[in-house]
Each structure stands twice: as structure tokens, then as C-alpha cells.
Length: 136
Image 1: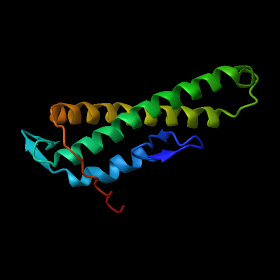
Image 2: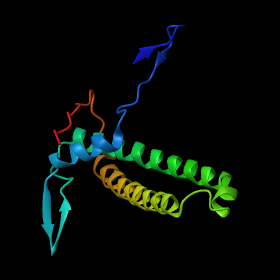
Image 3: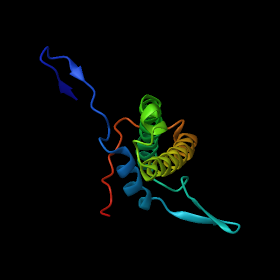
């Protein structure tokens, strides 16, 4: 927590880079075979770690949704330039690929968040632990 000029406590976000942190925390979770697939073994993981990954996934999902909405608004505003060919087609294609990949990241973050919520719904520690991210 930090304070503003009126000495009022301001909550800091748990992570300034939630997608990066989520990705770097995931190696701490074991995978187990279920039939022919492998799934993340949330049950055997440290609850504080699962909670931290879930929180990062939630923030990532929200950030992706807001960012894609902002890109959509920008594209609406530049549609006249697009119609006149003032914006190269490869730029529009690159934006399309960015939207596609970012949407997939948001959907994956949602799945991770839901799994984390399922395994930590009744977990209420007195003082949660913080797990450092792994080095890439």
C-alpha cells in the first residue's frame, strides 16, 4: 500500500505485468496425465500460488478485453482512411493477427482463472505468501 498527498491508503495492483507474471509462475504447477492429455495439477499446488496465478489471470483477462475494445474503437475512427487505402493492407492484416492472438490469450487466461477459482474458492489464509516468478 502507498499513500497519496492526503495520507489516504491506495491499494497497489498485485502485479504490474500480470500476463508475464502468470506465464512465469505456471512452471511451478505440475502437469498430470489424464487419458491422452496433460492437465495442470491445481490440486497438488500450493494454494497461495494458485491464488496468485488466478489473480494474474483475472487481471490479464480484463486488460485484454479493454485493450481489444480500445483497438476496435480506433479502427472505427480510422475507417475512412482504410477505405481510401491510406493505411496499407499489411498493417490491417497485422492488427488482425494481433487481435486474434490477444483474444486467444484472454480466453486462456479466463480458463486459468476459472480453474484457480475452483481450487481456491474456500481458501482464506491469514497472510498469503508471495511466489517469485521463474526466470525465462
